[in-house]
Image (cartoon, rainbow, N blue to C red; front, side, top):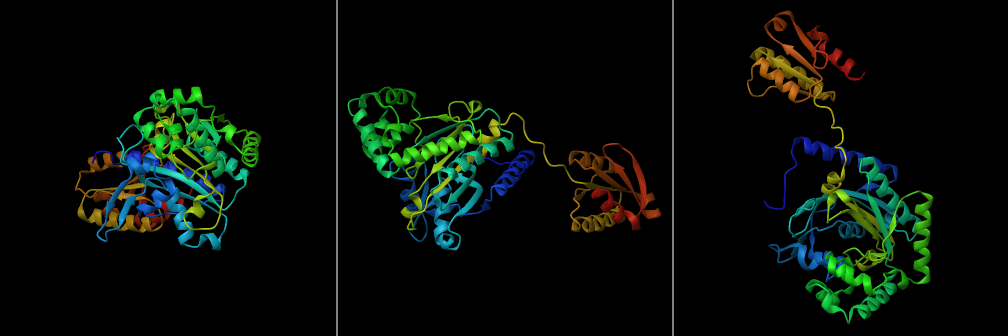
Length: 414
C-alpha cells in the first residue's frame, strides 16, 4: 500500500538495536514504558491538537465504525498518553510520572523521504511538574538519546510561546502585523489567518516565512514576566549542562497544546523537511482533557528520519550461535532434539528445514552468521559424536554426544 513499507531482516535488526539503546537511555532517566492503542475516538485529537491545525484539518485517518463512532488512527502519541494517564488514575496513584513510548503513527499526507503515511516515533512524556528544570532535562535527554544512537551534526532550536494569555497577545500582535499584508501569504495561510493564526508561523512556504519575518519580530516580546523567567531558567540550565541550542523566535510547532518551552531538532541530511523530532511543554492539556491542572513536557523523534540522519548504521546483533548440519533422517532427529534442549537454555540454534545438501547447509550457516556449526554425518552417528566447527577459524573437533550440550553451554558463557 502506498505510504507504508515493510521492515525486513537487516533493517528490522537496525531498528531493534536503536530501540534497545533508547530503552537504556530512558531507563537511566527514570522513564517507564507505556503502550497505548493505535485507534482513539476522534474527539481526543480534535480537542487536544486543535481545529485549524494541519493534522486535524488535513492529515488524520478518520472513519466511522460499526457503532457509528468516529475513530482516528493516532497521528501522534501525546494526547493518547495523557488520556491513559487520566483514565487509568495514574494522576492520583503516581502524581508525577515519566513515561516513554515507541510505535507507529498515521497521517494522511503525501509520502516523502522519512515520513510515510504510517511512520514511527520514539518519545517521552513527563507529566505532573511545572519546573523549568524539567524542560531542560527533557531537552538534554533528547540530545543524549541522539548521541547514544549515533546521530551527529544535529541542531536543537528552542523558543517559548508563554502561557495562554501570552499566546492570545501573540495572536493579536501577529494578526495586527499581517492584516495589511495578506496578499503576501499563501492560500493556506489566508485560511489560517481566520481560523488559527499562530499556524501561520508554522508554514513551510518560504515566501510566507520571509514575509512574516519582515513584519513580525517573533514570540519573545509577548512573554509575561513569569514566562520570561521560566524560559531564562531553561536556557541557563541547558548552558550549565553544555547542551548546544539555537534560539528560534518563530518556532511554534504545529499543535495547539504547546505552552512555554517549545523545541525542535533538525539535521541537514534530511533536506527541506529537516526535522528529526520536536517537543515542548503542554501545561494545559491534562486539564483540557478533564483532569486537574498538571504541567507536562515531552518530545518525539521520528524513527525513519533518525535512521536517515545516521552517519553509520549501528553494528547489528550477532547471528545465531550454533547451526546443525546433518546428512540423514536419523542424524537430523538427533540434531533437532539437541537444538531444542539448547534453545531452552537461551542458546540460539538453527537447522535445515528444506532438505538441503550438507554443502548448502554450510552456506546457510554462513548466511545466518553462525558462530559454530555442529556437523552430524554417518561417522558421527556411528561413533556417538558431533563435529563442532568454529566458523571464524575453520578449526573443528569431535565431541562425544553425551558431553556436547555441557560443552556448548561452557563455551557460550565465556
